[in-house]
Image (cartoon, rainbow, N blue to C red; front, side, top):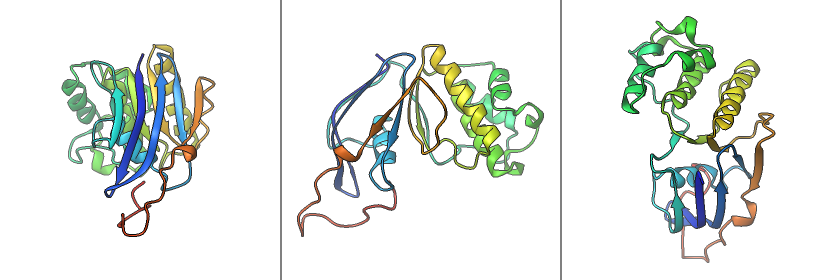
Length: 208
C-alpha cells in the first residue's frame, strides 16, 4: 500500500475543518480531492505530507516518504534549470536529470537562470522536481496553476508514466487531467461541524 489515511481530522487556525477522513492508495492509483474553495484540500495534503500535525487519526506513508508539490515552486532563482534539478536530485540520492528535463519540455531551457523563466516555465521546473526525487508517492496541490494546455498535457503524461511504474498520486486539482486511473474524493461529507459561538474564530477560508 502506498498510502493509508484513517479517521484523520485536520485543523486550520486552531479550528478543525475536516474530520474522519479515510482513504487508501495502492501502486498505480491516483486520487483527486475535490470540494469548494476553503474546504481544506491544502490543509489535508500538508497534513498527509507531515508538514503539520493532525488533530487526530493516522497517516501511513511509504518508508522513504512522499514527494510534495505545493503552491511554491521551490526554486533557487540564481541557479539554472539544470542546476536546480541537480540540487534536488542529489538531496534525494538521484543522479540523472535528463528524463525530467525531457518530460517537462525543459531541455532548451537547461542553462537559463530560474529567475529569468516565465511563470509557466517556473511551474514546469517546480513539477520536474518530482521526477528526480525517486519517491513512489506524489502529493500535489493544484499542480497545473500557471500552465497552458500543452504543459497540462505534459504533466498529465508524467503522472500517467509515474502510475505505470507503480507510483501513486494524491492531488487537489480542478483540471481534468484525463487520467483513467484517477478516482474522485469529494471532501464535502468530511467537513467538520461548525464550532458553536465562542468556541473558535480567526481565519476560516483564506488558506484552504
